[in-house]
Amino acid sequence: MSNQISIGNLIKQGENIFINYKKQDAIIDARLLMMHLFDEDYTWILMNRDKIVPEHIKQSYIYLVAKRTQGIPLQYITNSQEFMGLNFYVDERVLIPRQDTETLVEQIIEISKTKSLKNAVEIGIGSGCISIALAHYINNLKIVGIDICKKALEVANKNINIYNYQDRISIINSDVFNEFTLEDELLDLVISNPPYITKDETPFLMKELHCEPKIALTDDNDGLTFYEIISKDAHNYLREGGIIAFEIAFNQAKNVSKLLYENNYNDIQVIKDLSGKDRVVIATK
Ligand SMILES: C[S@@+](CC[C@H](N)C(=O)[O-])C[C@H]1O[C@@H](n2cnc3c(N)ncnc32)[C@H](O)[C@@H]1O
Image 1: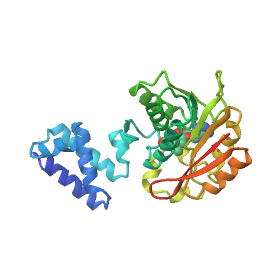
Image 2: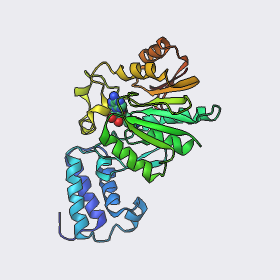
Image 3: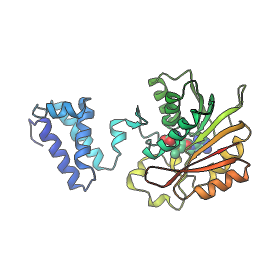
Image 4: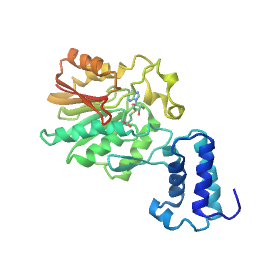
């Protein structure tokens, strides 16, 4: 890359490198990395495209472009991902929040309009995106977020602090419910987006998925392990009429519904995501 270069031209060079590496979204990634380094939006980039890039930002840009060409997800480079209109800090310690998961959160927000939801547990809180979005959109809901991974809990904690929900979301390092004790009232909601990719599917995951923690993605089994454990254990903590809600893979609706039925839940519903795939299963105790 030449010595003095404008913002617009440096973005163009970044885009060309991505094109050479056959990266999808070359232009978007090239722009987003520049926006990240200047901590500005795209309008600012457009207005300043002829401005000369300071040397240290140019070096950082070249470094980040190289990282991206190695398959590091953009979100881990920029340390941010939008979810339910909120911005979350993310890094290699957690799964990157997915748009598909918004279906699960939206369903619970919808239910909260007709049913009082005061206390919940989330199994596998990861970055905290589900619990924080629920706290943000449902007044007075208190949540205990559980994760087996201490490093993931550090990220959840960071996001909880960013959004100032320390009084409404607490975190516990636990294998599912093992370290959890009920305070006084039974739960209104148990929610989880558990690791559901099967052992057999794991080798076929996209290259970028291999950057995300394996423990967040797969149960190293048939994909149903957590649905089975959580459905069974949640019965001890949910009140009559309480809700159990899961994100599922597109092909798990039948098996997860069956597990819920066998564990005596009622009103089992399967909800599709925006692309028309089965994505959420919700039931009532
Ligand atoms: C698919 S990720 C979901 C993360 C976040 N809730 C989201 O939706 O983006 C699953 C999470 O479950 C956690 N996890 C895996 N095994 C667990 C276990 N036995 N008990 C509790 N959490 C577990 C992982 O560390 C990971 O954070």
